[in-house]
Image (cartoon, rainbow, N blue to C red; front, top):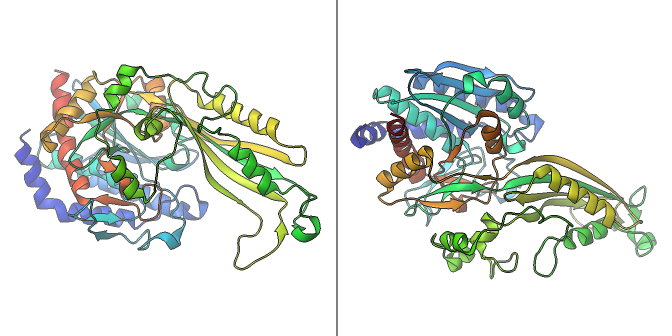
Length: 464
């Protein structure tokens, strides 16, 4: 496949490819909120239609106990290798809406310092509609130019943002038609637009919710304050006590299975370019914070964490209401590293919270969802194909990195299908994923469409 074929087709169809993505971003496919159920299905149907138009066969909405998986395939020769593309069409809630500079489901293109060519601002622009749709358009490009070198299968799910709990059973039920050679995923990031990279590791996840109950009803804080435990105060203290002065997590047994990197491995990681001052400037913070003895890249890539994702209780409306609340709540996530296990960590967290709660309150701990950490070999045919493809389009060899995020299903792909996943992301960490004003650079979107066909080329060649 000549690269000129790719760039010519891309240049001729750029505007249409962009407009199609913008239409997809207008649909609020929020999987965490049941009121958006119809929009989630509408998005799945839109992805199905685009796969059909691109040239895929056997395209369907494959039912699960939750949202459907969009499945499609193109088998040009059963003897040729098969690439399985995974992505997700669901998105995070847009809350808090008031912090968006433009409506989250009315995509707009604006220039930024990091994206001088323009970026699409919308929920799901980068995570994962924009990155997932690159694969649909790259497939279309190969089909329309008659350059598809191998077989391809698509599984685009609608529950990644709520833990992919129904994808596991679906994979087990569909093992026969999911036979392939490699999983290709674009749901991660690169270091910078002038520094390509490929994630070779993802952290796992254990996501919990806690409920602390004090008195049997909300109380007048003047009449009862100081004599009755305030669940919010208690919850804040319990959360604060989960870290010591070195930001080390205090839950007994939490670090027992953590795989420690050698000095040589940490030195190799340190070769990746990182500007601490630029990092702080981008986030508008005076200093970074984290576990003592590790730098920022290590804290987000090779160390486990515990963070509060939401906390609430009592009166939060306008003005003042002097109330001592009956209940307080928090959502807490723990990012895990090899060889930690999400079920074990969830159990350790629950035991710790129940044991450390004072007798003045009752505690309820609920585990929501989780996933296991993953490490990918840099010596595989898939990684080498991705590296060669990026080197050709970016003009420099990509750096292997460890991602701080989690894609819980990746470990299951390995367990159930026996396949490695290549984390072929094109977004940036600064693209405000899961935050207000999420965006995705036009450069990144088009660069992905340009690079993905070259992965197919080099991966197919490696299997001859």
